[in-house]
Image (cartoon, rainbow, N blue to C red; front, side, top):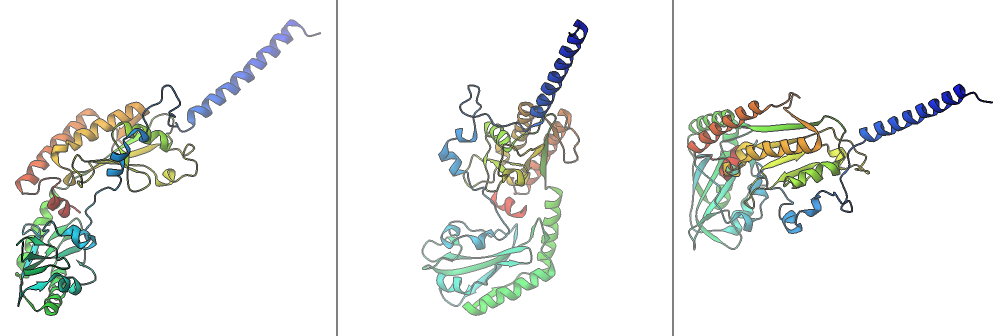
Amino acid sequence: MLTSLQLGLIVLGLLVVVAVLLYNRWQTRRLQPRRARTAASPAAEPTLGAVEEADLEHHRHEPTLGADWAAALPAAAAASTAVLDAQLDAIVALTPESVVSGDAMLAALPGTRRIGSKPFFIEARQSETQAWESPRAGQRYEELKAGIQLANRHGALNEIEFSEFVVKLQAYCDALHLSADFPDMMVEVGRARELDQFAADHDAQLTFTIRATRAAWSPGYLTQHAAMQGFVAGALPGRMVLPASQPGAAPILVLQYETQAALSDDPDQAALRQFSIGLDVPHVARSERPFVRMREASMQLAKAMEGLITDDGGQPLQTDAMDRIGADLEVLYDALEQRGLAAGMPLTRRLFT
């Protein structure tokens, strides 16, 4: 016969075992990545699918402006706008012996329109419309010009690059019987260095990192919350963007997380402990209020997902630090506009590429 003491000890032991099991189960669930709520749940949050399909498709491909972008564009697409600008390019006037066909111009183009890290461009004035455009098949041109970009994020145009540009352009002129009026190399290299220094002094690429303070997140949980802040799927795995208000403009913000987690066979089990929100300042128009939206989106996501906003070094970003960043950006925007290189302009995006 069990005494009352023995029975009490057995019951107490069972309660301890049950408590330990429950605690371990709670700990396991607490440490599992948080998952996105499904539409069947009464408290379901809007998911990425709640974004209108037409709008999602419209912004699916992020607009970019690579250093060799003009060479990659179809001739018909590039024809609508002249690219060369005296502020950003060393321009060479080309004089033909007679009217030149667009077919001949296209056939004579070199295989690559890059000199080192700098793109160069060929433009022509159409005989009928008198508009400057990239050469197109079936068109006729009576005046031409070429140019090489003076600076970009790879640095300033140097003497070697300028010399290679002259050699490549002279071969093009020989094929089409054009005469070229080349500018002075040292003058153009000097302009390139000055422009590069200005760009270096007024460049800004900001990144906020949101780090989990408690449980990790699954990719679905993250994208679900990001969609509520206006982010849509980007062109690459682990990337979402906040689209600009104008079609063709660079995205306002870019949200990034681990590519490996985005490509996981079981995304619900992939664990994310941080993600970043980035702003390429010169690429986004001031009118979009990009830093304000970056700050608001980061704070909303950190609050909803139990995260902490930090800088690249892991230091928490407080309100006063964000205020200082915002004030500094206003000064930067003013300087860019005074130079004729307002943030978000195609010319500005080309310089800061």
